Length: 89
Image (cartoon, rainbow, N blue to C red):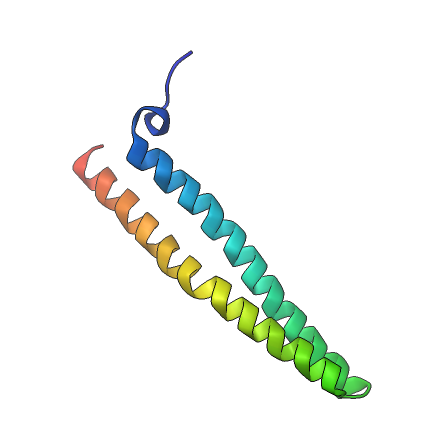
């Protein structure tokens, strides 16, 4: 069995794990924003009830909580990988 660089380097392995979690958080965060947009659209078309307002607000809050750190960590991982490639690692 040959080892890939990520298996022999714990830093790269940790980066891969964080990258997978940030990708999941991005999908969930944008999904929450989608739910919020759909709730507002439904409220505008049908009837805007307090429940629709709560769903829209909840989607925005959850999406923001998930996306803020995920986007920052995603850029940090990309920058670290770019720096590693520049150094020839």
